[in-house]
Length: 184
Length: 113
Image 1 (cartoon, chains in turn green, cyan):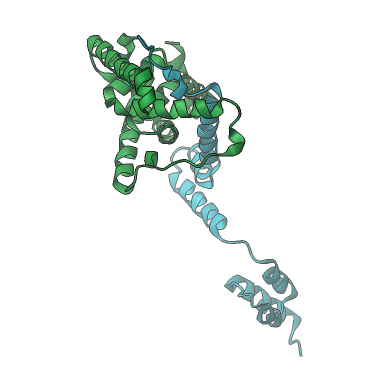
Image 2 (cartoon, rainbow over the protein chains, first blue to last red):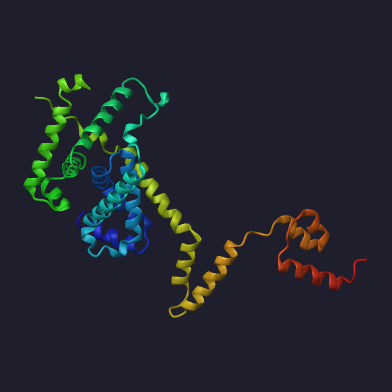
């Protein structure tokens, strides 16, 4: 993997879209986790990931050290996500999260509704975390990053990474505790 | 003690990943296939170094021909038939080149009436 990424970057720079596709496959998960840690919804995060990957394709020549492609891409994703968030704040008088989404009856079968409600609740609780806690939680639990890798990506210490994860999990536990479930 | 919920629920499923990758690659392919990209590629690779002016000229000519709307079939027929009356009847507005083509044709054929 260490050698593979720089080689793919070099090929992609020469216009090899297949090589770039492999880079996208390798990094789409981390890109999503970083985007979702900044923007409030899954749909926003997917938009950000697409825009960021297109920007990366356009600017591959600016990736000075291909062996650090992931860090370079994460910086682009974060920048696009922050722009997206500030644009949304400027134009959205009402948060989209507050607007009920009409249900598509054909999409629900059996436990689908319960699962979707659980996911929506999880989304809301994750949004209660601060940005750093969210980023650490998503990189750790979604992408399986170690604290050392997270610390390197987010430019924080290992200890801070551990603390953010612990705080995030404490909040999740509290929000999903049986008493809290009854209250919601 | 309650276990925290499974956060992977809000992550990308394998299907989501495929959809996202496909969408990104489609947008990249669409860009690569656009006329501007093709022209830039031709201008950069097909012509020898130092002939940037020629590349710009070729790009300009192709861009004009790409941007100019195709001649409407009726106007083309009118040019072929060489009749101003047809243009008037159909309401088509011929280009200067089309008018010239008809004038030349009429002059060669002599007066119609």
